[in-house]
Length: 199
Image (tube, rainbow, N blue to C red):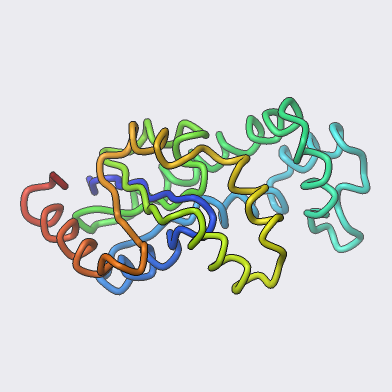
């Protein structure tokens, strides 16, 4: 059975870039956030529960989730956020386990923005934190999403900080435009393919 590697990082850290590189190395990548978004639209049980929580308007006329409405409702309400997570996370876990059983590579990558916060990390054999300085992360997201720095900083402040994540991470990939990213990834890849360890 393939070794399970969890990859996470705060907004603007470069987590998606890291996973693209793993894909170039022929490593299967499970995108937990994308799967969660798909399940919110396709899973009947999740849809019904969200309608009970927020009303019919939580879904658009085309049956797609009204993401802005949901974000506005849960952004400053921890209890509502927890209820939504408790609906979605178990379904994502099931999807991952089914997907993992079908893979035949030496290891697979589970990419998730809230790997530690959600408890997904407990399912992994190893975890990797992609880190970058806060100022650089803000700069990247402002450039990518064309939004105000204050909005990015607000999102960052609502996520776990890297210091707390590092306590649970098996390995850190530093993506600060000073350390070369690809050699760091190649080192992990080599260790996993040879002895199944990353330290």
